[in-house]
Amino acid sequence: MSTLLTPRTDVRRADQRFKTRIAWLDSKHSFSFGRHYDPANTHHGLLLVNNDDIVRPGTGFETHPHQDMEIVTWVLRGSLVHQDSTGHSGVIYPGLAQRMSAGTGILHSEKNDAYRLEPDRPHDEVHFVQMWVVPDESGITPGYEQLEIDDELLSGRLVPVASGMDRHAGAAAIRIRNRYAALHAARLQPGQSVQLPDAPYLHLFVPRGAVTLEGTGPLGAGDAVRFTATGGQRVTATEPAEILAWEMHATLSDQAG
Image 1 (tube, rainbow, N blue to C red):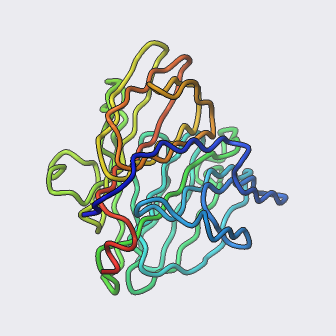
Image 2: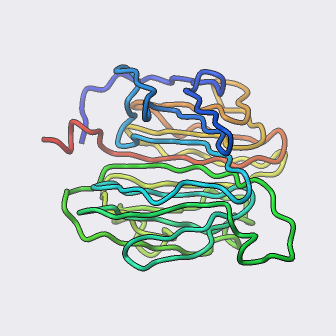
């Protein structure tokens, strides 16, 4: 949808992120979030939130509201218990794609209390990335979807995790209510590589491991790259790694219009 964009590759290092550290939470924010606000860093394309969270066992986010947002949660380690006001509940774990549509309004909680469900197992911190994109329209009915895609990730390919784009119909694990956005993920072993999508806006995040980005160089855990009017670069793992890539064919101003 966007035109006359200037090609740009903007590398954001892990230590440049906003940080929230309290007794039970270690959270790092790629964009303005909560008390952390920078008017020059509020979003990229349609992505408003990319939070990299570690939550201690037996703790977590108590029940709180959301509205008019598509929220995708991706767990890297441990397990996260979800409950919401529409009656959905479950445990999110690595390889499970999960989306919550806040729509007209939803209450939910997210806790690292899987020990309550499996008391005989030792439980560690849960590490997850939560990402928010705006929906196509406000006031939709709240919803929830999840699907196991661990087998697909074993291929070492870039796998569609969540998408509202027509071309991913039948291929993406879960649907989001934005026809201009898609999230892809890959688990890579050293030497494996994938090619990024080509889109007006692209956000690459490395939640764990280390990779090399064609034309840019090494990226480590917590590093991100914001692409504008460019794409198609190859990402190659230099150690076991996981990457998350948002492909976006619009930005907030496009949708506002």
